Length: 156
Image (tube, rainbow, N blue to C red; front, top):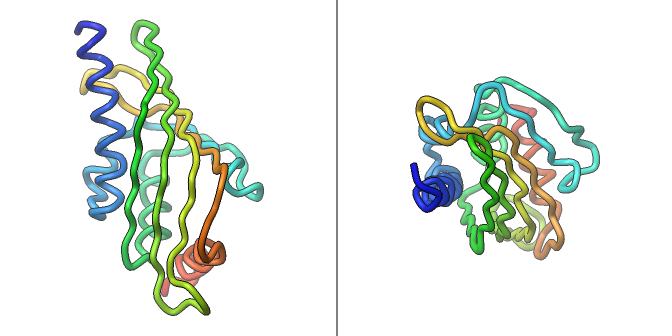
């Protein structure tokens, strides 16, 4: 593949990341990741430690939490990619809207942040090998995320 084709494939992967989450396409979401993959959400939630886990575990956790929301909209743009042979990194600013019914006060929660991901070229194409999110600003009902996590843990 040419450099342009590699960058286009990685941009498409990031586009599909947001679309799969918003459309609750968990089978499609699973195809985006290497297995296993590493994650770091400590700059979104300090109680979460960086981890390496099986793809199915990551997808199941995302499905459990995101599935609690009535709707989400993930916007990822201005993706900056650095290629290094069969690996790559990206910096991708994001804005994610979340709506959760049954909350006291406002149902909307918005996070603004930056994905700092790593990718690996596999026999099936590029896959996310490291997923990291740094949240830099929040608006709306910030308790909505915690409530979604709690609902997922209770299985409600």
